[in-house]
Length: 151
Image (cartoon, rainbow, N blue to C red):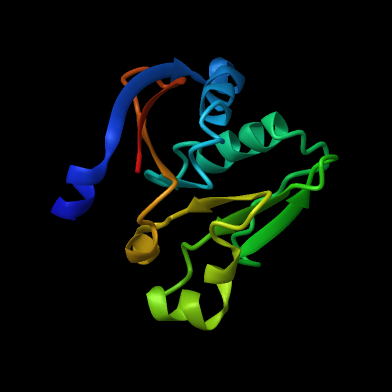
């Protein structure tokens, strides 16, 4: 993990009210030219799926966006023909299970982005063009702390 920490750049921390989620999503959307993969970490209920839903709307996805908890991933396409893959890896046991399912083929594709909840098991694959987002509870019940960095 030390090698990853040394290669991270631009680590930033922000606190936000839940009512500001679209503003937070737009700031992450602004990183899309650098980040082909966005990862989302944090405790259950911190708002990972909610933030991804708002971020996908920034990518012009205008269909119902649902959590892929039981299907592992959902695919969305916007009106530009760009593909957006939303993964939930909570139920995967290890990196080998991710690879055997062929999910690694959806990372870093042209005209596509991947949004991954619970990414720890695939950390070895995330060596470039990745935005790491961590959500934490802030002191107020309606506030969250967002920490993000890129490689």
